[in-house]
Every structure is written in structure tokens, then in C-alpha cells.
Amino acid sequence: MTYDLIIVGAGPAGIFTALELLRRGSRAKILLVEKGRPVQQRHCPKAETGRCMNCRPYCHITTGFSGAGAFSDGKLSLSCEVGGDLPSLIGEDKAQALIDYTDKIYLEFGADPHVEGVGQGEEIKEIRKRAIRAGLKLVDCPIRHLGTEKAQSLYLALQNELEAKGVELLFGAECVNILLKDKACRGILLRQNGAEREVYGRRVVIATGRRGADWLESLCAEHGIAHRPGTVDIGVRVEVRSEIMETVNRVLYESKLIGYPRPYKNKVRTFCQNPGGFVSQENYDDDLAVVNGHSYKETKSENTNLAILVSHNFTEPFNQPIAYAQRVGELTNMLGAGRIMVQRYGDILDGKRTWQKELAQSNLRPTLTDAVAGDITAAMPYRAMTNIIEFIRMLDQVVPGFASGETLLYSPELKFYSNRVKMDENLVTSIEGLYCLGDSSGWTRGLMMASVMGVLMGQKLCEQEGL
Image 1 (cartoon, rainbow, N blue to C red):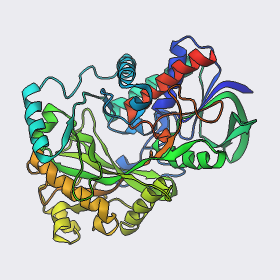
Image 2: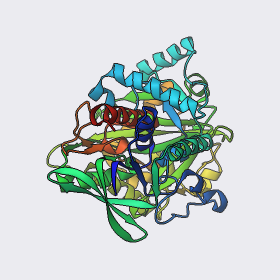
Image 3: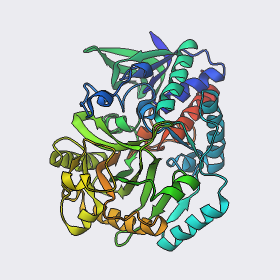
Image 4: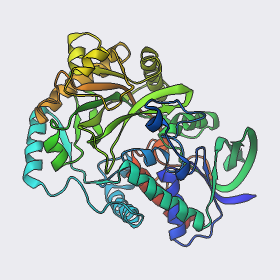
């Protein structure tokens, strides 16, 4: 059987590609391939066991319909200044218009109409003043918070919509490779239940998310798909008492701050702030455990967590930024016996490891209860660690108390979207019939911009291919 369109990966980019085609009246025969399970069958056992069970063959938090989005904090960034480099490809005005359009679709499927981070003019000005004095840039970005539990029900509604409109959803199937003929993509090689088979399609969209970034990178190398190494982010998940972040949480909900600390002046930024949230563990292939943060609509902790990420841009002759970040994660996992490590900021400055009994004596209690107290500096590269320490000192000028001795740093926090697939404003790659979208393409970061790229893909396929 030959499909009009095969979409690999049922994350936001893949979902919204199919959805936009349907909304434009397409009668195309669409196959959406997903390695994991449907939304309603995704379940992390940690809620019952109290610790990560290292689920096989994949982590249910990162894999399945809606990708990591269904089990993340579910925040939609409503500004084109946030979410990757797609605006540089299609223009800021067009990117913002697509964000507004996509946001309306999310509202149709049950997103909370309330928007965080707007309407507090004078208080935002005061926060910005402190940021400027500290040498940081505050990025204005309204946030629509879905919430971890609400995001799952929203994406279930989207899943049901696609199924009802005739999109064929194939779960538990892994795309092993693409099929080329006469230098054009003509389908994919699937593995399901231990057996491999070829599936043919007129067009193939790869939208495998951050989890599939390294696989797409190997695919580009094997088939000569034009690409270049991009940025890789290495950092930590920081947790403080919510009293410290009270003003910022109330006024902005998520403070997006960017700085270039001395002496290296690498770009360092805050990411994925979760007021009243919970630090979480995610597992990638080869048992790589990484840290993330969740924020629920109803259930709240006494803490706020956020990521501090250091951007690394490598030049010749090195061309394996994803592998580099993975090695950092693997070394940290080795020290933590396969689990996430946590260390107090004051202990880092004192040059000592953190002990479990010290965590129990602090005002701040870890929300990731099975994290291993230790020394993250033994695995974190010196340059990255220096940037993180200096950035925390800068943040303390914006949020007094942030650089408290008991502030917790969890490691490793890694973002795998470094491979940048070369394409034009019509999202055309160097291989005929092949398109690459979302975080795995290197052009987007996060739920909203990946969704936007999917919407744009659906529009382009309708216009150019008549699907």
C-alpha cells in the first residue's frame, strides 16, 4: 500500500501537520507512525513505586502520542522570540501569526483560556531593571499553561480527532530507516513486533522530537541529507523554595532570562520554570537518565524549579555535539548509579559533595525524592559549571535568595536538538519528498513552535503538493 503522506513521530509537529491537512479539507491517505503508545495507555509507574523503574523498551514519559509534551508541564510560549530559530527561516511576522493561529486550535481542544505573564506592567519593569543591572536580558513571553495532567486530556482529544477523520495511527512501530529511489524519498523501513517491512509514501515527514535527534543525525550522515551541527544545551535543573520566587512567579509565571557570564561569555538561559512544580526523571535510549520538570494544574509543591542551560557551539573538526552531551550525561549517571544526582549550591562553592542527611536538615526538600546526593561537578565540564555558577550569582540580583547555600542543582539536564537540517522557507530538504520538522530538525524548541512548524508543513503540502 502506498500512502500520500507518512509522518514519523506523533509529537506536536507530526500531530499538527496531519491536523492542518484535515482542516483544509485534504483527502490524503495519511499514516502516522509512533514508536510508543496512545495517550490513554501511557503510564509512568513511579507514582506507585516511588522511584524510576527504567521502563523498557522505552520511557513512557518521553515516548508515545504527543511525545514528551503529554507528560511535561505543558506550557505554550506565545511569543516568536521563544522556541528556537524557525522565525529566522520564515520571518518573525509570519511566525507570530502562526503562533496566534495555532494557539486558537489549542483553545478549541480544551486549553485554559487564562494567559500567564501579562498585565503586571510596573512590576515587570522593576524585574527588568534588576535584570539589566545584573547583565541579563528578560524576554517578554506570555505563557498558556496546560498543566501536566490537563495536557494529557487535550492531546487525547487531538488523537481522537485524527482517528475520527481517517488518519491511520500505527503505534508500537519504529522507523528504522528511510527508503530512497533515484535520490528521492519513497517510504520508510518499519520495525514492529520484531519484524521489519517497507511502507511506501509519496511524501515522508520526520518529526521525532528531541528524543529522535540523534537518530535523525545518523540518518542525515548515512543518506547525505544536508545538515550542520548546531547548538547543544548542557545544564542543571535548579530547585528553590517558592517563597524565593514569589514575585517572579506571580508576575511572569515563567521568567525567561538570558545572559553571557564571564569569562567564557557562552549563552546561558533559564528554561521551563515550574512554580509549585516537581523535578522529574526521564530515560532515553541506552539507559540515559536526564532531569526535567513538571507542573500540574491542581497538585502543587512548596518549591519552584527551572533549568539553567549553557549553549555549546562546536566548530571544525568536531561534528558530534549530541554525542558530546550524551557522554556528559553518562558520566553523571555513572556517579549516581544510574539515577539523577543532586547537590546543594553552597556545597559546590565549598568544594564538597552533598550528603543525604544534609538534605534532610534543609528548609528546601527535594521533590525528586529518589535523586542521589553527591557531587555533580565531578562530571560536569569545567566550562559549563563555571558558566552555571556565575549565572546563578547574576540571577541572585534579580531574585534575591536564589543563590542560597541550600539551593538544589540536579544533573544532568540535556537538550538534544543540535542537528540543524538545511531547508528553505517551504521546509524543503535536500532530498526530494523528505521533510524534517520540530525539535529533531534543530529548528524548534518546545511545544508551541514545534506545533507551529507542523501547521506550516500542513499548509505547504496543501499548496505545493495538492494533498
